[in-house]
Length: 172
Length: 172
DNA sequence: ACAGCCATGTAACTTGTTACATGATTTT
DNA sequence: AAAATCATGTAACAAGTTACATGGCTGT
Image (cartoon, chains in turn yellow, green, purple, orange):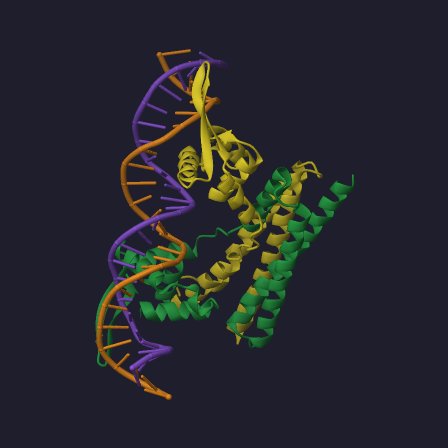
């Protein structure tokens, strides 16, 4: 959230309400999925940290708004974020932990777990591909969806390999 | 962390020091990468939440240790975690935000960004594949590494597609 | 004597997240 | 008159993270 808002402000100054709307659109979130308060909390924390500054703007026939923009320190922070090459790589690890826990505790059947996970990923894949068809093929969003799709396919392939190994092991 | 520790305790009761060691091994972390304090913080919070309970065990010629085990509520929580099918799917989104920020602010060159990201992922891929060769091919860890490898390859392919589009767009 | 392992924790800070509160204006 | 939109925030808790503190035992 912190970085997301900073990156939006890097593009141009904006006030909280505006940022919230852009986020809801950009992330394709359902209306209630992003609590408005969170944007304001984040902005005030960024201000306290000296990464953004606000100007109050009075509006005739509308509530005042506070437009935030990056400070020099803020721009530096964005630069650092841009050149940070870490890539989140947690999903398979977490699922693997679940499988191990399931197998050792017998609270759940690992094979069934893999199976429902695969179905869930297939559902997501169909959804992503449907969205990609609606998108104009040259748009920014299309590329994003293509990435999601490739990754989902890789994860599904992995689950299939995994399941086969589990079944082989069981039949021994 | 919370869920990781719960899942380890689901397997068998353990004390903090032991959990820390298992984690360092299981996650293949460098020694200092996991602050010991964090395990204890997490454990005490889990205890406060009533998900685990501790028994103190005196040891001759060693400091006492506190062995934690799951309560009924804790087992329920693990069950819920096991059957939760969400799958983290954030990485491409975050990188995409970075690219957009880079393009609109000109704080960094998007093409260069994609390029260094690709190199970084290639480095990771080589590392993962080297680890996979050291692992006995039937072991649990080998499958995990296979998953990591498949996913990295998918991400790399996506970056290549992305880069091509960017270059095409530039030459127009 | 000193390093390193065994073993535990606290204080303090940051970030994510939610529930709730406020109030004006515009549309139905 | 009610509902939606514009616009802002606070209080409070949960979770991640680090720096720091403590102390005994074991091997060289």
